[in-house]
Image 1 (spheres, one colour):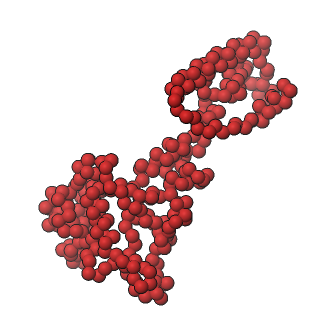
Image 2 (cartoon, rainbow, N blue to C red):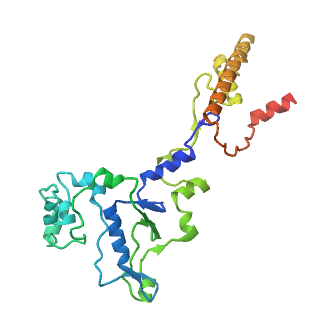
Length: 303
């Protein structure tokens, strides 16, 4: 809070990035067995003669998938685990068998797709879900996030592999366009918060605009100007409709001065405590505060 206005700090805004898995991040932490799939995926690509990333036809391209991320959905009585893994593997992993009457399963059955092979790496999943340590340990490996633009921004832990082989086809295709360098840097969540006045994403970005906060009586964090204005407002008689609000009486003025002295003493104690708590800490650069219109007027009258 500054001068009676409440707003999230830069550090609080940056904290939201921990709630994002991939979007607007430079890299991300993922479980070991998922990182292995990312590395296998990366090994299956190469640049063709047109400079476009394509897959090696001789290598199997597996889906990069970690079921722990959708654990709540897979634990439902009516789940789609049998469609993701296939009935045999799903049963071997101890998945919850549903009655398979959902619309998607019925469609797969009508199209004869229930027994089709998946693109999951065989025997890669020794257990359906990872333990908390395996899934959220601080020592998890990092992998780079790739950024593209098509109709919208695309952020992915795997590179896009084109299936096109000819220049003419590529020119007319809807392949996502890679975003790299400074352009990508300016799209990162941390860059937007630290270096621009734009909003990134999340509740603190769209609902965290500064708003007036009602101070409590004698709040020592208020500046002298706002503290006096707050106390003066509390001492003023109620306004009468159609009339100007009356000035403070002599008794009220004396009371105001007494209260201001108490607030000043409280503010001094807070500053002493802050100094004691920050001994040995090198302070950052302090911005010069601009005077409000009221403060400028008061100074001009005094001079």
